[in-house]
Image 1 (tube, rainbow, N blue to C red):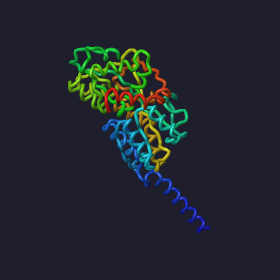
Image 2 (image 1 turned 180 degrees about the vertical axis):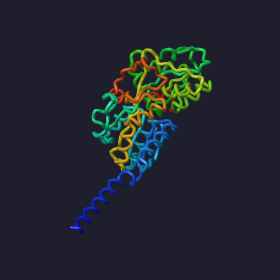
Image 3 (image 1 turned 90 degrees about the horizontal axis):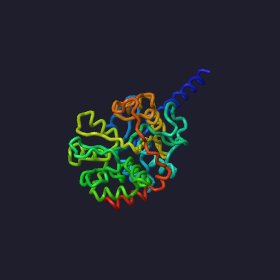
Image 4 (image 1 turned 135 degrees about the horizontal axis):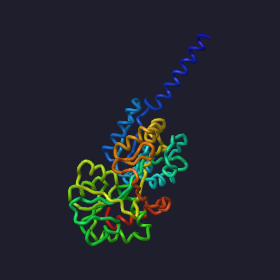
Length: 328
């Protein structure tokens, strides 16, 4: 009996050690993220503090850039990421269409709106990020509407993030291109105005804050956080509406450390992870944790009702057309 008990106990210890090693002792999960560098570092540091046994390997770049890198990895038969935290649902839908994402039906989604995550639970929105207009406080014009940016008064003065690099910018491009009141005519006028397309949102903020360019198209939290720190910028939510992305998180079907990837998703969606997003100046997906101080209670932002599936169908063609117009 003693021998049997010892054998059973040893088996349980081995099983427990095996299960634990699937998270902590296994190869560190690899995260591909489009978060700004400082935010990505804070996110991973907070996750590691919550899960001391799990290290994380990070690759950070723009969403479109990440998709290009992953396409090359798929072609080589060697996809690297275990978990993704990238700008938009369109990019996730493209990956889902190619059967690259692992469903996670056990994800804890209490308090998160159903339209913020995939119905098949392959990706989950972590926050709401809108794109609007930023301008330097010394600028001659005070833009209020998207159409203002195409006026002659804004010639040589506008900078925007390239949709070839930024997922939020790619979402804006295809969303606007499909709108009757904007369409490609809007972008052609921007080109006529000598609008500059730069690698990412961070470059837009730097250009406008420094006064190099007086106007920019930019994600909300970057402008608002910069203004809070004393940067000479103002941000406008055009009354006709703004595009919004949800920075979803997802597990790759080819993940080598599935348990580590699940732990990361759980953290991002947890109250702790959502409070971290709020502290970084984002509007969290879980509304119960609060809202950033730059968005007072009662203030509502009108989100443009873009058709995500239509954007998925046209995004690559739109990027190609944008590249012909503005360069790669």
